[in-house]
Image 1: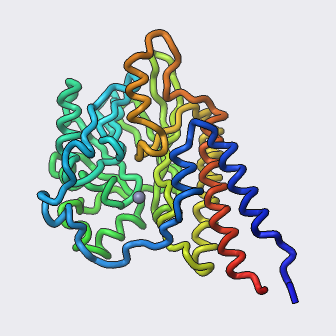
Image 2: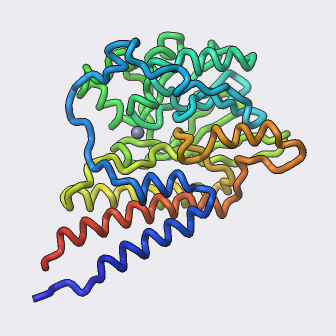
Image 3: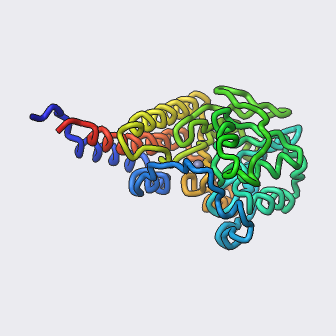
Length: 322
Ligand SMILES: [Zn+2]
C-alpha cells in the first residue's frame, strides 16, 4: 500500500526548472555544478596529504592555473587563478584578503599579483578564509608567516587540528575565530562575516562595500557552493542539504537587506570572474560587468537553493515507504 502521495519526479523536475529559470545565462556554471553534475555526496574523512601538498613538483602545470591579476573596482583587486579566486580589498590601513587559493600558486598569484599591480603585499593585514578546503586555505600559512592575521570560522579551524597531515604546508596557527555577523574592520572599511554552513560546517560568506569610479556598490561574496558534503544517503543527507538550503536563504536575505548588486565567489565557475575581468578591460563608458543588479544576485541564491532542494527530494524519495 502506498503511504506517499508525493509525485517525486514532478517535484524534482519543478526544482530543477526553478533553478534553470533563475540561472538564465548569467549563472550557467552554478546551475551545471548543482543540478547537472552528480553531487559528490562525500567528503575526505581521511588524514591523507593531498599530493600537491606533499610535493610541490606535483602541482599542476602553470598554464592550467595562471591568470593575470587585475583591478576590478576602485578598491578591490583580483589576485586569483583561472579557476579559484582570491580578492584583495584595499582599505585606508592596508588590505583585507579574501581567500588564498592553493599552496603551490598562492605566492605567485597573490604576492606576485599584488606586486605586478603596484600594491604592497606586506600591507595585507587580515586574511579571511571562506572555508578550510585546500583551494581556499592554501596560502594562509604563507601569508601568516608574512605577518597577516587569519580569520576563519571556529568549526573549520577545528578541521586543522583534526587532520594535521592533510594541512601540512597550509596550516596557519589558530588565530581569529569568526562569528555570525562579525564586522571585520580595517581603517575605513568593514567586511561583515556571515555563517553559511553547508559546503563545510563552518563556511563563511561576506558582505562589503566597493567603489566603482567613486560610486558605492555592495558585494555579497558566496563562500561555498558545491554539494560536496555527506549527502548520498537520506541520513544525514536530508539534514545536511537542509542546513545548506537554510544558509543560502539566509545569505540571500542579508544580500537583499544591504542592497547587494554584485555577486562574487571564490570559483570563477560560479561568478565568471575571469571572463568578466576580460570584459572589464573593454568596458569604456559601459556598465560594470560585475554589477548584475539585486534581482540577479537573488537569482544566484535561487539556483543554489533549488539545486540543493532537487538533491534533497531525491533523498526523500529514497527514504519514503513504497
Ligand atoms: Zn570547498
